[in-house]
Image (cartoon, rainbow, N blue to C red; front, side, top):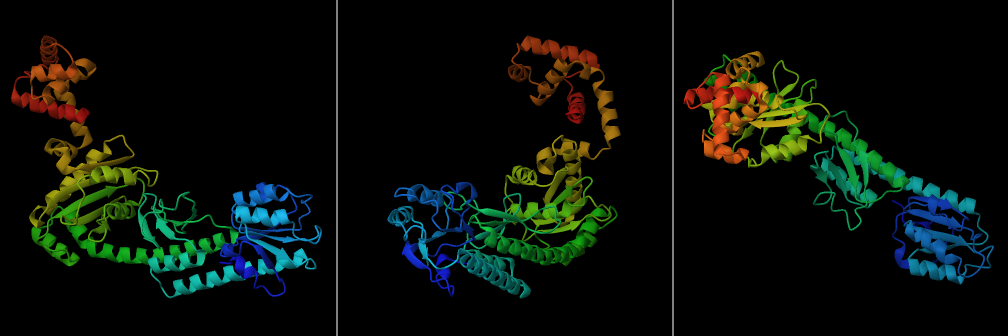
Length: 477
C-alpha cells in the first residue's frame, strides 16, 4: 500500500508539501495526469493527480478544479508552477479548504519522470503485498490469519461471506453491512466450483493496485477453502457408517448403536436427522453443510452423502445443539439464496437410538411431502406435518391418487362443496364454526354438507367416514 507521504521519499523527485501535511497518510491507487479544467469523468478514488496547471488562467479557476478532486476522493495533487509563475495562491487555498494534499513539483522536472517513478513505486508495493500474502498462504495460515494479513496490506477490514449472508471468517467483528456511514466496499469472487460460492468483501473502495492485491487474496482464500473441504470430507467418512445403517431396512438397533458410537456422539443423547434432496444435482451435502452453519449447528453436526443416491445427503444433529425453534423458516430463507434447482429438506426426530430408524423414515416421508410443494425450496418437519401427512407421504403417488379418487368421487367437480367439506372437517364437524369461517348462514352450511353427502354417498356425521374423507382431501391439498 503506497501512501502520499511515500512519494516525498522517492529519490530525485524532490516534491515539496504546500498544504495538507496532516493528510499524507492517504493511499495512492494510481497516478493520473490532466490539464482539463473539469476532469471529473476520468477520476476515481485514490488517484494521485499530476497537473502542469495549463487550465489555470486567473484567480478563481482553482476552486472548481479542486472541488472536483475532493468529490472524487482523490489522494492528492502534485502541481508544477513552471507555466504560471509558481503555484497560484488560490490553488493552495482551495486545496486547504477541500482537504486535498498539495505537493509542488520542481519547475525543471519532467512529468514523464514523475509518472515513471510513481508507477514503479506503486508496482513495487503491490508486488511486495503479493509476496507477503503468498508467504502467509505457504505457511498454511488459517483463513482468519490470511484475512488479517490481507486487511493489513489493504488497509481495510476483510470478510469472507456466502450468499446466505453467513460470515465464514473476518478480520473484524460484525457482518460487512457495518462498513461505516456510507457503506463503501469492494467485493471479489473467491475461486472454486462450489454449490455455495464464497466472496471476499473489503471495507473500502479499492483502486487498481489494491484491487490486484485483493484479487490475489481471493485466490489464496480459494486454496484455503480447498483445505477446509478436505477436512469436511474427512468428517463425512465418520458419519458414513451411520448413514448406511439408517438406509439399510434390515439393519438392527445394535448396528445403529455401533455406528453412532463410531461418530463420537454420546450414545445417550437424542439426535435429529435431516435429509436433503437436490433433484438433478449432486450438491445436497454442501448445501446441507451451509444450512447447518447458518443454524449454528455445524460444529456438532455430521453430514454424509446418502449411499448410492447422488442427489441426497443426511445430517445427524445432537438434540442439545441449540437447535432454533424457527429453524424451518430460517432454513427456507437461507436456501432460497442458493442455487437454481430444487432444494428439499426433511427432518425427523429428535430420537434416542431405539427410535433412530423411525426418525429416518420420518425424515424421508417429510422430504416426500416437501417434494409435493410447488416451491423451489421446500422444508418439512415430521413433528409439524402431523401423522396423517407423514403416512400419506410414505405411500406411492399412484396409490395415493387412487385412494383419494375412490373416496372423493365426483366431489372435486364442485369446488364450493369441496371447500365447504374441508372447512367443516377442520372445524371438527361443527356447523356453527364452519359457517362462521365461510361467512354463510348455518342453514346454508347444513344444506351444502347434506348435498356433499349425497355426492359422496357417505354419512359425514360418522367419525370413520370423516377420517377417510379428510385423508383424501389431504392428498388433494
